[in-house]
Image (cartoon, rainbow, N blue to C red; front, side, top):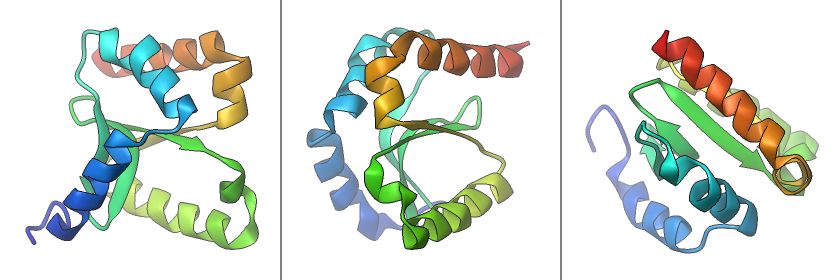
Length: 119
């Protein structure tokens, strides 16, 4: 294991990348894959696997299903977010419902965050 990530998580990251949720697939194939800045799917950062990561912009995107809203998972998400922020990442969180019902607004929000980095 090096200082940047836990290499033991790489196989799990590959499994997650090959078995994305429908919301992750929609965001990846209908938006992130086609923009002019590199995003990675299911990227290992430290002890965590993030849904999407743009190392250049230090941006992490997390899509949250219903399990993220119970007390224990909220606590784990806060710890994870703190770790990522300490590494210099900005975290954008969207619910799966937002991806399905308000996709254009999600894409616009991501674009605005990328533009603020690039300007």
